[in-house]
Amino acid sequence: MRRFLLIAVSLVVSFTNPVFANDHNNLDSGRPLSFDDAESLGFGEQSIEFGGSLVFPENSNLGGEFDIEYLNGIIRNGHIIIGIDPQLGGRVNSDDTGFDLGNLSVGFFYNFNREYDNVPAFAIRTDLGLPTGNNSRGLDFRLRGIASKTVGQFDRLHLNLNLNIKTDPDNGDRSFLPAAILGYSRPIGYPKRFDRTFLAELGVITGDNSNGGVLIRTGMGIRQQINRQGVIDWGIEGDIATNGHDQSQLKLKIGYSFGF
Image 1: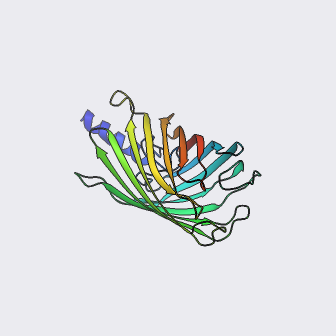
Image 2: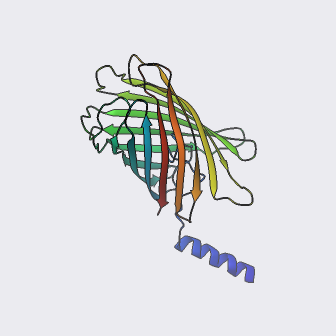
Image 3: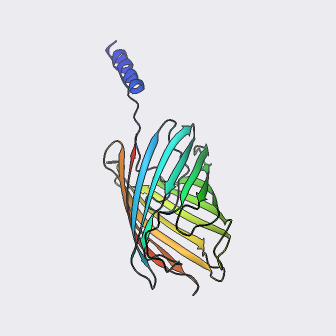
């Protein structure tokens, strides 16, 4: 009887006080690396994410990049993303060093299935970039296919395939930019503790310049749970140019996310 009462009380508490928590083991693009996992935000959950980067562009001044995103689990297995990405100082493919509010983006993420047996979890993400930044023109579209699969006991791989389209590219720039990123994640300290995740990535990114080649993207980072609703992240990420028309860069990244 006592056990039944304890279970009943626990169920009542869980329904009257739902927990909306950010999870260090759920991975969003930019927090801190460039790939997503295939898991969506929970239905009814919301999250605000902040990020900042020190940017060291090749043969240019030190710069800073920032991003702010709002996520809302508006349907089961799906959420919307609204974001903006201000920047200042040196940046690749531009001589401008002034403050730029950046482009407003609106996106939708949908998870088709959870991982089971040997079948990966699959998801899709679409983003629309609006020309709200300095000297911006046209619309930017991105379609991202995502597959996440556990390998071994604790390791996970995350394949992201991107199709980026610019409707009004700058002179000499491409309008069609495919990319592929392979991400890796592993909880650190498990099973003794489960509050920290290590991430790494390796990708091939098409350069903006139509005379350029591809960029090799690589990075590593950490996501650390600091309380039930908050996660901080930090990492290092670099783009290595393979062509003289492209520009390499290095980023030191830090961010914070909280759910409600």
